[in-house]
Image (cartoon, rainbow, N blue to C red; front, side, top):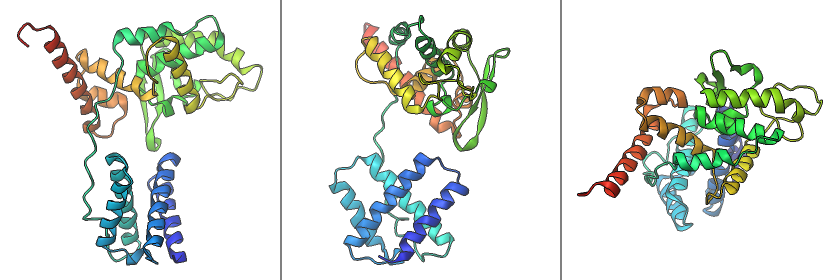
Length: 300
């Protein structure tokens, strides 16, 4: 393997960071996927990126399938390498894109999971409201369900982003996109209770860093911290399985559409760039309607 290989990867990562403004999480995936392909090149005695042919790309695709990776993972890896070579062509570091004609396997269509209202009620009831941490957890739960924001957006909220007069929160989304999202009376009350009664206790006299949600040490709450909080609430509610924060986002969207909200409004609230990302929730609501019909109609 030549030094040019590593240089090309460094340049591509800088491009993703500076020009594309991708998150660190996404960049790590790109770095890992391309590094895995470099290992394959070494095994195949391919010394330079410009030497990779379409036939090599096909062999690599076969290798991914032999490793029994999911279709989604295979599709991500091939898409990553296609983007990598597209960048190399732009920078005149390669003469061809060997992955341009490699067909990406279609991912399994999985409908997003969501909570029924009765299940969600059990999780809300699992929140203790007589401790600072319990009051904080209820505020997190009400805000996630009441706005549909991502957990990564939730941990980035500062006190100054909240407007209690208008009941809105300024959300800092993906790629530095910002949007205002309204929240309802339940989230309004839970947030006020948390800020007035619990947050100062959790800070424990430390200098206020301005982040809305605080961990038990007084520092800013992390993505992982919220996941642990939600999983403990699910365990306490006696519901089976683990919860991922996106399930509350799915629930928010599904409940809105089930109750008559229009697609464009839900798209804007979720911060989706494309309507197609929001349309998946119509499949959820339609499936729910079909199941209800089959279960209750005499001639279903």
